[in-house]
Length: 329
Ligand SMILES: Cc1ncc(C[n+]2csc(CCOP(=O)(O)OP(=O)(O)O)c2C)c(N)n1
Ligand SMILES: [Mg+2]
Image (tube, rainbow, N blue to C red; front, top):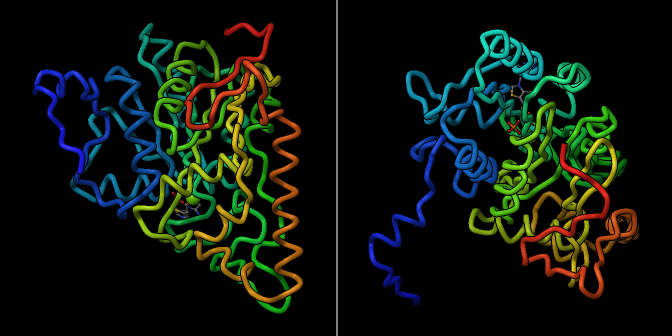
């Protein structure tokens, strides 16, 4: 076992400077959302206000009368986070204050029910960083499928059986839809890459105008894996090409995290109970596995994820290749 021998002053220096979300909340062991929210709030500093949609993150951080937040935080409805954040930003602007506004929502709150409010916020150009904690289902209410649930995944409302092999439809490409609002910055990231999250949050906050970050967050309960496997699974989603790590500026691809060693999708799928029906002797299962591999291949091709030569970074390398010619707003 590795023994840490760093002097205490060095250990303190390595501690994050700011902690917007305290420990001691009620998230499950291995919760991807809890880790992602901690990483985001480490970077944003104290001069912020957050509007948080209904969902796991809101519930597990604020069991009345307690709160794990160390920043001003408001619970919006499930469906109106974008509108609440837009109102907060307008009010602060009218007061001449520089406090940054963030909106937090789950995939259900973002891809589905809160989408209209989000779209309005983006279109009107509010200076808000909207962070979507994407655990690919309505977890808080008992693992119902959302439009973010990946194809063929089992949820309580997309059970595999005679009629279908899990969810019939495809995962919505939310970051492209958001980017199509011509906003200055929209990106994806993953809890498996903490420094990538920090980098993208810093970038987004430095930009005037609406920005968006979708963070892929495994859910041990909803995906059916051990809590200690969350990070490995999140990393495999990226390394298979199923969750491309990209940055979009005003709708154009500005950066990608290339993959040096692309892994087969089965490496990712077989670790999760929500895909267990794909690993049985069944022709339909075989076809679904091929379909999912084709989705990953498509992502790799569309975003040019398989880097070569000097542009090739290992996906462990936590760096993104900047595509030429784009300027940060
Ligand atoms: C208008 C409305 N419909 C339904 C609900 C019930 N509800 C609360 S949280 C939630 C699911 C949240 O899913 P998601 O946004 O993905 O967040 P997660 O819990 O997965 O983090 C639902 C359906 C609600 N609070 N308000
Ligand atoms: Mg969710």
